[in-house]
Every structure is written in C-alpha cells, then in structure tokens.
Image 1 (tube, helix red, strand yellow):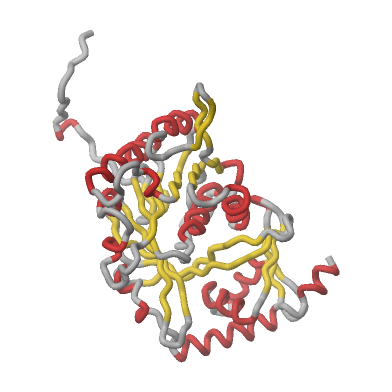
Image 2 (cartoon, one colour):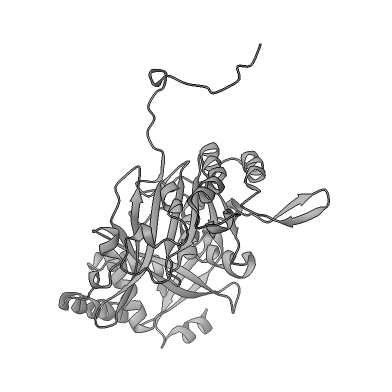
Length: 357
C-alpha cells in the first residue's frame, strides 16, 4: 500500500469531542503543559513534590477530592535527589516505589547528564515502557531551552517536545520557573522569567507568593493565574514547615501544609494588601492556642487525631497550624512511606515523651 505523502487534513465532522481529563479538577489536566512560577523562597519545588506525593498515594487534594494513583518522573537541575528531593518526598508520605528521578543518558562513548533541551524523545521511550505516568516535573523549565529563553520563537520550538510528551503519555507536565526581578505589581503572567511564550504555551499557570499585612504577619498563597480549560483565579493558602525525619536523625526537610480556599484574581491574591488579620481572626488564633495547650498537656498525639478534634471544635487546619507555630509545638515523623505518621508535642513535654517511648 502506497503511503500518502504531504500535508494531511481531517474533517471536523469526522471527530468526536472529548472532555478534559483532570488529575486534579480545574488545577492539573492530563496531557497538558503546566507552569508553576513564583518568587524565590515561596516553596515551588516543595509544592511540586507535595503534589507528586498525593498522586503516588492516590490521596486527597487540598479541596478534599481524591486523586487517582500513578507514577511520577522528576528531573531537577538545581536540587540533589538524596539530600533534598527524597527527604521532602518522604516528609509528604510519598509512595517511593512510584517515584523515579531522571538521571544520566547512556551512550556508546559513556554516560552524560540528562539534558531536557535534547533528550525528551529518549525520556518518552523509557516512560512509555513504564506506563501509568501521571506527572512529570521539570525543574527549572528554562533548562529545556537550549537557545535564548527570552525569544518567543526559540522558547516555543524548545518546549514543543515537552508538550508532545505530555500528550503521548497523557501526563501532567509541570515546569517550574521564577518570577523576574523588579516585576512586583505587574500582571502575574508578565512576571514569569524569560519569554512570554512560557506562559502562553502552558494551558494552566500556577503562581506562588508570600503576602503580608501591615503588622508583618505573612502567609503563602498558590493561585491560578491562567487556565485554558477551567476557571482561573482563586487559590489556596499554605505554609512551609521544617521537620526532622525520625528514621534519619539530623535530616531536616520541608513540608507543605495546605490552608483554605481563597477567592479573587491572581493579581489581587498576590497583593500584600489582600491578606490581613481581623480582630476576629486574632481571637480565633488565641482560642486555637488554648485548645492545643489543653489537648497536648499530657503528652504528644497523632497529627491526624489532632486535626479531627480541631475540626470538631470548629477550627480550620490553617488556624490550627498557625496556633501550632505560635506555641512552638514540635512535629516528629515516625515510619516511612504509606506507614508513616506524625505526632505533635508541646516543647515542655517532648523530651519526656521520647524518653518514655
């Protein structure tokens, strides 16, 4: 049979519409290219690893909906797998059997480091053999561009293999980027470092920021700056905690703690004036501190049990976490992977409880 050459056309009438497949409804779309951008110190990589952990466990998203489980691929040009990425994944309770780090490329003349600007086809070959890939993290996304990252044409050509990779594997491609210096006050998409093509090619753009009130209280927020397939705007408050892995003494890692959903546009939510403590919020925080003091007076309790009791008492998890920070309550991690648990201790009781156990 002779193969027809040249441009191929297909009639729209021969196609059947298909719905967007969401990994996380309105936030992470299967087969699409996503961008996660923000200022330094807002925990972008930690958020990406939190999302990865949720997918590996098939656990709940910040809005309470359930994720299907699957495998995750991670390439990082900035962080070491052993001392940074692995501890953060373990802190979030990831199923490590479902996480794979992209490392070297073997060639006839030896091995070399993986280069996202040239090795995406080889990554597809490997990933397609594995199956069940739900998320691929590229950190930073600028490393996928071999040319000038400020030129639209070069960025579009460079990112196209990643876009195609997501389509072929039906996986979320999540590229991580920074905000440009001196871009405060501009539209969030205009703040992404490099060419505007990064934000233009992404079907969903998520941005992070620290916002503060006149009293100096601060909060982090993750916001949808753009979505071609669902609503934009709106976001979630979150905090980053430093915790020690009990099974590996001396290893301190970062953990994302999700707060409640917040309404507003990305520009509004990223503005310092949007977040403030009202008198009622201050009273609520004081009540939550009293609640925790009473609950933990006799020793440590499981984090899950504390959160359940707090909700029964009318406190949100974010209020609970703020009270925890104000009291200097310590978290200790026990176990690994799916069997891991967290316990909270008042500073005055932690040594006594550890010696007892």
